[in-house]
Length: 553
Ligand SMILES: Cc1ncc(C[n+]2csc(CCOP(=O)(O)OP(=O)(O)O)c2C)c(N)n1
Image (cartoon, rainbow, N blue to C red):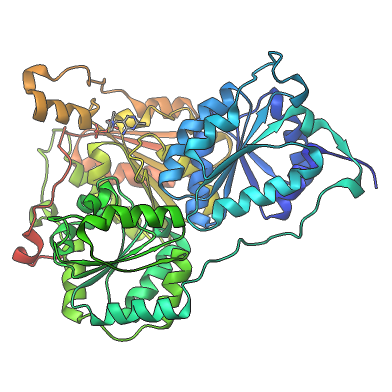
């Protein structure tokens, strides 16, 4: 058998592992991989900024559960992509970043784009290394994919030196570990599962809190099965707003009443106010299940001052959810589960009827209501929500079977790449992204990618001509006369999208919104519905309101 090029070994390993798409921006250092991708039948989605490629791989990982793969060039290309890894890491999203790299033979001599790439990516990945030889590239890929999806999923980086990609290896010399189709699973173990089940059954007001890795796909389904089997409410927390996540309504009202909290891969971090009162009851007990021994230790240390941890175990959250559901015994009262559901669904009654003046800018709630009708009308839908105050309104007012948000990183800007990847992963779903106007600017050029790659989706831009989240901070903290520097223009993003090959709609009156959304969907093109909205501060759902009002809808 003829000798194989390193790039071919790499591409074959990716294809053998089931990878079909590379989210990429080209460059000298990775052109051998582009060439090898042809024979390995890997499609390339060529983006306009490296950050977008990483966000796409992130979204692919979250939606499919299989690592998305981004392929960037070395030096500046790699550096441009690294920032987006932070979002994937915090969201516990399985993905692999492959970056071209200066040739090993030239390192230390001022090679073109020479940089300590693996070091740069290390703090924002689960693991990060530079491939050392062509013969072991297949093993690098298998290892990277397995690390990305094992335990607490997350991003992994491998740098690919140019001479390694170009080196030729005799077929017999290619390292081949047995193909590891899936990483080892850490199960909860029978006695631990029994003990957790007993605690759950004993508790009056138990809550299972799942981490961001459980927000979509198999994780979401496992959460539902666990809730059904145990009767204990299972809540996935993936927002940087934590206990005040607008998608969780008045959840904070019931969280503080729980007498047992099972952390299922959920860190007791800032989002959970470190497990302390008053967010949680002072006598609430904890069970901590985490896939990483180090994270488990940190959780125990965080919770140590309250000395209320009943049990802790190292296990993968998904497997643990399945094991707990299998051993479930009747426990939590139906009333408690209903109270929790009611609190989460709670939205102030006035939101139902809130309307702007007929000619004025719209209120974000009106946008959410109209978009929800689109989502409800679709057989399958993926909702993407991003941005500051408008993003929070979007999360409070809309829902869909699958949802992508920035996640605990609290970053803005990923919505358009997320939507592209969602369209690729779910070709038959309606993909709708709601995002602020400031946020839209981050990856506006990817509307060109969407048009070129024929990945239509609907972007609904809440245009308040402002970085409103920061403007609101200025108003609150420094006063109106010191609010400055956060203005934007009422830009015609719809026209910009039309220039990039998409469909555009400009909405200035509430009555025009629904027809504009329909036309945009019907266009079958990447579409921007640019809605002029008022500068509303993010929604707050008043503490205690849910149970007092009893008005779930
Ligand atoms: C990557 C990143 N940069 C900056 C911020 C800080 N930030 C959070 S919200 C926001 C304003 C977003 O403006 P826009 O998208 O127009 O939404 P609006 O708040 O106006 O509704 C900014 C700058 C961030 N969270 N992430």
